[in-house]
Image 1 (cartoon, rainbow, N blue to C red):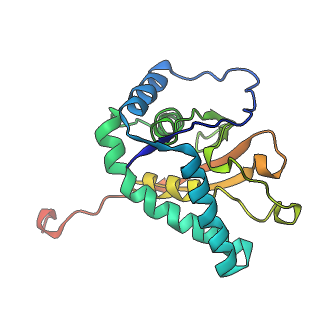
Image 2 (image 1 turned 180 degrees about the vertical axis):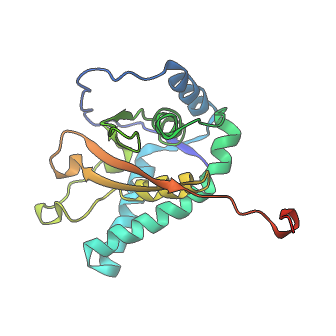
Length: 208
């Protein structure tokens, strides 16, 4: 899958303070990004915008549009895993915290060219926030106030996370709780590990 490069840049929201992130993840992300073929960022953003616009025309109900974007993203995530594992150089992650860092620093960098911060872990280490300060999907986009709190414009990303992590035996819930398009300073996805998926064993390997 081709990633993209942006030739036109909008104002980027600064990150207030640095999060403690393992440097190896950043290096892996940078290397993976450098190896990916690129497409025009403006075309990428406008194509996605056309998709969302068409879904709104087709379904009218913005909550249904969110669901459709989630489903599309899930299917994309399922297909991206093999490419990610083959090109990223990432080995098995020992726990969900490590997985979240890999998603933020390697996967987002590899496919979207951005760094994402991980923060706000719960005590159990099963829920965190992914903070997106520079979302390429939202370039050239302005939502009407009537869509605030209803339409999550980049909801395809939540579906991608669900689909991709399910392929590595993690059942997760992902949902936007903040969006710069709705006046927030940062876009935030709340990511929660709901459980591990046991890999089914084929009948030929089962004991009698």
